[in-house]
Every structure is written in C-alpha cells, then in structure tokens.
Amino acid sequence: MTPHTRVFSACALALWLSACGGGSDGSNGLSARMLVSNEAAGAQCANGGTRIDAGLDINSNGLLDATEISSTQYVCNGAAGASGSSGATGSTGSTGATGSAGASGSNGLNTLVSMSAEAAGAHCSNGGQKVEAGLDSNANGVLDASEISSTAYVCNGATGATGATGATGAAGSDVTNGTNGSNGINGSTTLLGIVTEAAGANCANGGSKVTSGLDSNGNGLLDAGEVTSTAYVCTGAIGATGAAGTNGSSTLIAIVTEAAGAHCAYGGNKITSGLDSNGNGVLDASEVSATSYVCNGAPGATGATGATGPAGPGVTWVDVTATSVQAAANMGYVADSVSRVVITLPPSASLAVGNLVSVSGAGTGGWTLAQNAGQTIQTEGIGLRNTNWVQQLGSGQHYWYAIASSADGSHLAAVDYNSGYVYTSTNQGTSWTQQTGSGQRHWQAIASDALGAHLVAADDSGGYIYTSGDGGVTWTQQTSSGQRSWFAVTSSADGTHLAAGDYNGYIYTSANGGVSWTQQTSMGYHNWVAMAASTDGSHLAAVAHNTNYVYTSTNFGSTWTQQPGSGAVPHSWQSIASSADGSHLAAGDTGGYIYTSPDGGVTWTQQTASGQHNWQ
Image (cartoon, rainbow, N blue to C red):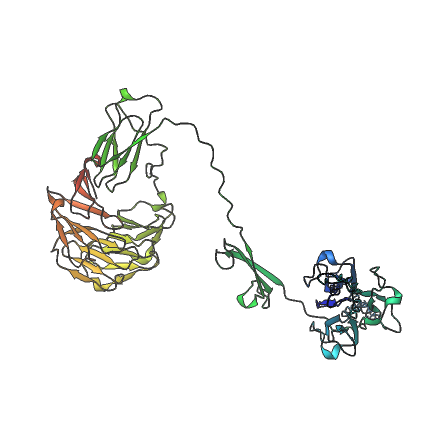
C-alpha cells in the first residue's frame, strides 16, 4: 500500500479579552497536529499499513515533533489471500500422474487513506480535515475519486468565548488601566481512535473502525462519550486466483568510483541500480532506475608535529659551480653546473667511522665521484640500475644488429641482420616472438615510438624502409622511400616523424609515419650510420663514417648544422643518442671514447671514464 502522509491541525479554543482600560485578549490555544506515515510489516501490522500519530504543537513550529506525540494508532493492511485449492487427482492409469498444485491466490487490494483540509462549512463549522478511504482498485498507489468508499471529517473546535471585561480602576490623578482579564482556556484536543473491525455488518471482510472527537475531559483518551464521528476502512474481498505470473527480472547494482566533483567533494562511490530487463546479467545504461552516491569524508585535520628526532652527525651543504671539488667529512655538495662536477672523496686518513659525504645534483652537467688511491666505492644495494645483466635465452642466438625500446622499457624490438626476421618482446625481454610478417631481410636498423606500437626498420641490401603499426605483427613496405642502402632510422615518440640515413647518399625524412619521404640535401652526401631524435622529432642528430663531425637539425631535418666542436680531433663515429628535448647528446667513437654534449652538439666532452672501445 502506498502511504499518503498528511499533517492535520485542529484549532484549539481560545478566549480573548479586550477593553479600553480593561483586560487584554487571552492567548491562542495550542494547535493539535496529526502525522500519518507508512508502517512496515512487523509487530504493529503483520502485513504493513499506516501509522497515525497525534498531539499538541507545543512549540508552535507547525510540525508534530517526536516529543509532542501523545497518541499513536495503526491502520493495517489485510492479510494475503489464501492459496488456491489443489488440483484434482488425475484418473488412475498404469501410473497416474499427480495433479499440479493450484496457483496461489493474488493479494487482496490495498486500502488507501487520503486526508485533505476541509474549509469551514456544512461538514465542519470551524474547518478541519476530510478523511477519505477506499480500495486501490487500479493498483496505481493513488486513491482516485472513483475508488472512495467512505468519507469522514475531523473538525476543529469552536473558538473560546471572550473573557469578561475587567473592572474599572479607581480614580486618581491619572486614570490607570484595569487589570488584564484571565487568559482563555486552551481548546480541547481532537483525538482519533482506530481499532480493528471484525467481519460483519460494517465490513464484510473486516477492517478498521476510525472514531474521532474532542478530548473534553483532557485525559488524553478518546472516551466513548467524546466520539462525534465514526467511519470504517474495510479490507477488500479476496480476489479470484490469477494466472501464474512470469518470473520477475533480477535487480542489479553497480558500484563504480566517483571522482571528486559536484556529487562528492572528496570523491567516493557511485551506486546505480535497476532491473535486468534484457536478462544479460549486466546493468546497462538504459536499465538504471536509481542512482546514489556514497562519498568520502573530508580530510582530517593535520596531526600534531612529531617530536624532534635525535641529532645526526650533521652535514653542511656547499653549492658547487666549478667542475671539481675536494670533499671533506660531514659535508654535502650540490653539483650546480652546466658541466660535469667531479667530487673527490676525502683522504682516508681524515675519515672516521660514521662520517658522511652527501651529494645532490642541481645543474644540468651531472656529477661524478672520484676516489683516492686505495679507496673503493661500493655501489651494491644503493639502487643503481643496470648493475646486473640477465642473459635472455628466450631470444635465441642470432646475428643481432640493432634493438629499440618503448619509453618504459617493457616493449622491445630487435633485428637479425643475417637474412633473419624482426623479433619483439612485451615483457622486458624475458620472452620473444619471431615476427614472420616482417620477412627475412638484411635488417640493419630499427626504431620504436614511446609505446612500442609503431616500429620502423631498415633493409641495407638495396631494399626499402618498412613500418609496423601493431607492435611488429604486420609490416608495410614503404616504396616511396626508394631502394637504398639504409643504415640508420629514428622515430619521434608518437611514430609520426621519422628520419633515415642512406649509407651511400643523403638523409631522408617523413612527417606521416613513413608513407612519403623527403630527400634532405643540405648536409651533403655521406656514409650515414646512426641517427637520433628528440621526443617530438624536431631535433635530430646524425653521424657518418667518412666525416669527423656530428650533424644536427632543429627543424625536423629541413636544414642541418655541421658541429665543429665534434671534429676537433679525428673520429670514426658509429653511434649517437639524444635526450627527450634534444639538448643532451652522446656519441660513440669506434676504437675511442664516448663523448657527450650538454648544448645540442655545440660543445663536446671526451668521457675518459668510459675507456676506449669499439663503440657501436
């Protein structure tokens, strides 16, 4: 049954006194309030129903507060219809089938009660409330006009009579007003009584008897002599047994994280629910009928500051802008230079157990620790990367010539030069897949975008450049690149801007992932062997066998600069790498050292600590 909640008020009697030089009006009597609400199935109503609370509006706030309730009654729903009788037993055969049980009878119709204000008139001389009741025949949860079967009225009490005029005060130099008349007495409270009505003349199927009247003796009870109105709310007759209903749809609930915003200031969870109309076991967007939010509470206040820890050995920090410094015990050094800062450890004789030397990098040049004779720097356990190498047997033994990596190192791609394939790994090199779609070629070079999805590879045997957009599974021969002796390729982070070097020719660039290529002649004809690119592909660096120099471009390869600082002494450049912004470069000299540049290739530093090797 759908509850209809209404608040009723019955005007209390009030006695008013007024006179010129006489008593003032009495205060208004307290208003009676009535609150009707839904009562769940339980101790008061086995099948649920309506709860009716009544009392005086003591604080005059227009509401019946919990502390003002002086009486409570319940109008309960009728019990569910009895089950239909069992079907007759089938005729006897070799083995007679048992007749199916009759379907359960449908529930009786719900009884609805509607309350509305009744203006002063024929039914209530001082106004009041109109109480209508009836069965919800169309089961729409609303008491329609055609469903009303009984009407009763709860009327307000009449206004109290005016108090007598106070006596005139004695004459004096000034005439004083007479004393105020006594306040009028409060009007009587309207009470409502609801009791069960047995099946009989008033209700064929039983129901509730509703009586009302003024509490004349003020005892808070509706005595028999105070009843002025009686109405009956009857239980509907048991309906005929309906056909067996189809199975109902399941109710689904979905809970997802709700970001901080209009619904939850500090984030929380969004809860949606609804019937699984299509029976797919998923709460689809069109099935959502209710949405609510369970929000996180506001962050707690910052805790008190903890106690000061014990004093340490103490480190005094020094900002170092020079390229070298001699360290002392219990000192800290901030390497703050565009060139590499070499920090030499204190002599062993000046050190004691527990002494500290701290180093922090602030400049772009980085820093290096140098030890004195007889000293050793142990790096184990301090978090340095790549101090240990693992032989990845899953790759197999091949004539590996080049390898490329995604930005996070999870996706790798390598090429077998000896008429082999391209191989890829998606788990940091633990296992490898032979990508037969690449074909068997003289693969010389390979490059990857930041995700490892877009790859570009070069065939140096008078072949083409090939590209893949699915991590190496399928490959496209880019015929517009032409058939050349491709020795070097590089890629931007998104795989859009590519550059490639012809060992017997020029550098070529592509701005559409390798579909079309442009020959860049400004740097001349060389034996290009290695290339590197910044993240966006705008800054390029390249090296060639037949020149001492490194070449750089800052406009996607349109124009190039020969960097004189890279060729101060003869070199046989074989490899080159770039930082994300193209400002820091590193190049390998075959049979020599590694050289670094902090300014995009303008100046170079020979890194003797690398040793002399055949850097490839």
